[in-house]
Image 1 (cartoon, chains in turn red, purple):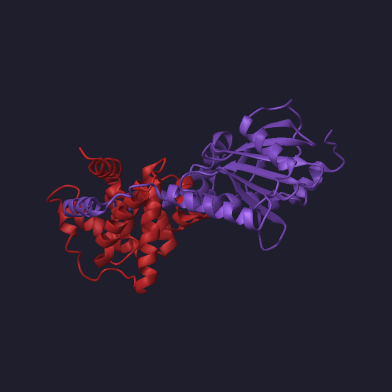
Image 2: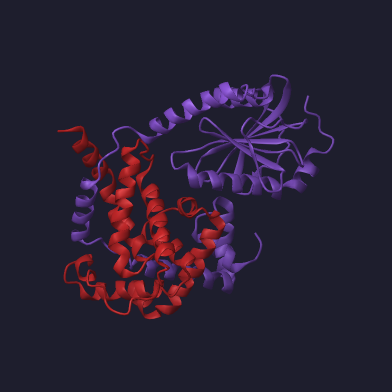
Length: 174
Length: 246
């Protein structure tokens, strides 16, 4: 196996398990049409850094930070308007957790739409902690914000989500 | 704990309230309708958010794999190339323009003390036991060449260590240090260590490590430490008044 091949394989083996995490973050950061581009660019940027001798100590927060920067620079470049997607994302059907589970799919779409009713800061904080599973300390480092600020954003965002999705809350709890 | 139901619930659900304070808050919640409602709503919101977690489509996984495989890996780490150019540039500049600047011996002594990890005799701290999220774990006499200081070792929530050296004389400015806008604080990086200095209200030198993804950690470190120290000014005055460092 060539050195070049090994570098790609090592990188993909270490980082592809974080694909869902990056995808969830990108989905709450940019328009549906840009999500896949942001995910792809995140991984190619990450590989560039990795192969330049800058591999991270911990992959997940590192790649989440790259994703956040990639998404934000795309937003700045394109001055993209961010709003709740008016039509169903054509890729949605492919990423249902359980194939054919239409109820779960509807619920995820409702949560996704509700997340876009929050401020960007609340949406990103909730995505990092509740969808991607980062601790408050990690989310604070990724967003370069004090931990107390992150927790306040998450808490206010969660309250708003719970109010928007009262019926969903009942279903989740049932 | 200040009675702010929203703040209390955010801290409680975020795991910041621990031990006896956690039990105390849980007892308080039973009687306090506002705190109970805040925590309940926060938990419900968390459940509903977690239910929105999605999996990346398989086609995207394949697309990412294919895209990465088309990127040529750097044959030589960029930092080596950059370091090579930087070294040449530094030599040229030094030869043509400048004589090398010497690091003040107090700064050298602190760096050596921090790196060696040698601790002196335990002593009473002159700083508070908590500086925001930092918790004091040790206070020792740091016998530095040319000056004495008290080394306060703090840990943050993620277990990272921050040492604050408090002296009775102003710290000299390290070579290459940058001052903030106020001019009261300076910051410098030395071989994966960050030093932040505040000479007011008490000459204090904060030393901590950077990490690989240092660009954002670095900023957080500066803000955290400056904020901690600034917010503790009154405590500094109260705690250090009349103390001797010998």
